[in-house]
Length: 259
Image: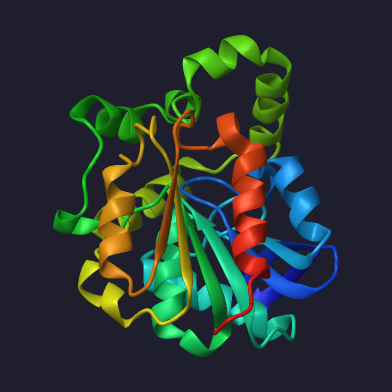
């Protein structure tokens, strides 16, 4: 299992494919195993994809520091340095999208293009989930994972859902690390700095997302200069329902030259 010494911890990562680097950052409690294999496979045909386990998740150390989006971004930047990657495209989903925003703000020289999936800016300027969903996030992590896809998708794709469940169970997060990540998520607010993001940005969201309401993507698109916004009508938080179109959108965006 490849690990690198980063920012006082041992950080797990995977490298797939070849080409210009693409760093992929997952969300609350998630790790490298959670990425949809089709996404990694297709992106790795065109880019050197770097997957990582955030601090506390998967096979990366927990540590006793207070977790913040800045700390996660520092970890990601440190991993890029450790791997000899001066600049990369960066894709983040959910909490990983907030980390990606922080990375683009704190380390603009490291981010070529930015892809933000199923995410928000956090704080009072964002649209929070319903009270029932917030309660679920704080008390029932399994139910939260189930809410990342629509029930219709679950009924129509039982084999794929089971495969996803098995990947999620490979390296589960501890209660301590989950609570540290959750608190970092609840405390973050990046809205006031979004206008400072200079990397070309694509924002992707599912219309049926209950974990991060899709209105948050419109907020991001209005605040980030020149950002593009793409909604997927059938998708929930994990975007599995429209995954082929999502992959094509990401490839199309990243493949365009930077003006």
